[in-house]
Image (cartoon, rainbow, N blue to C red; front, top):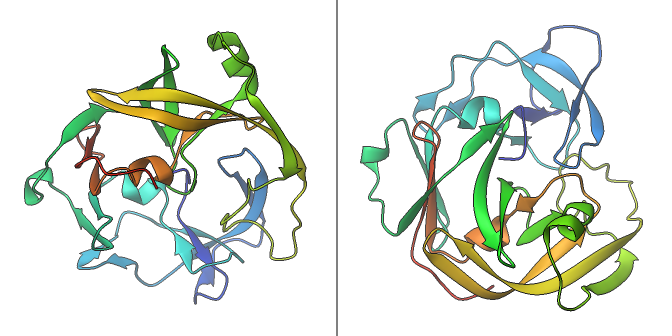
Length: 235
């Protein structure tokens, strides 16, 4: 959900549309190069994607990424217990339990509002980020009145851990992260004593470690809602 465009690995058979290199940015606003290509077919189970004329292609660390250009067309149910993903055009095909929260669009991103440390803050939903919540430190310094100074940590950055855009020969660099403990409210759900990261990334992000608090979740793009299943233990 943090990727603007669908991206396929360079080993997938394709036809190049143009010899010119194109560039795109990841969730950290870092630029990457790609080529515009066509493929014969792309299917999601029994659903055939037909609205796309071309795709972006480059060497990445997995076969491909389904970006916002495709996922925004569907309803997605992630069953984290049974490790299954269900996709449909209609929410009525799923049994939705638990609580629902609205999201709003900001370009290719979807954002939900959460309450952290007594303040409402919008977070980009990025299922490619394996952490819980990461907040821009400068924004946090302005928004939050910390009773205690956040914990300072300087070490090798994990920012690109699992990042499929990253080169296989790239090396982690020294970076600074701050941490603090806070309750986090999402709608009627209260998650207590969570570890919040303060980083120098440009955006405020909520990632998969948040969604793992629930047995399942549904990204309902046509209706602008996220449906959260039953609350589980911390990871």
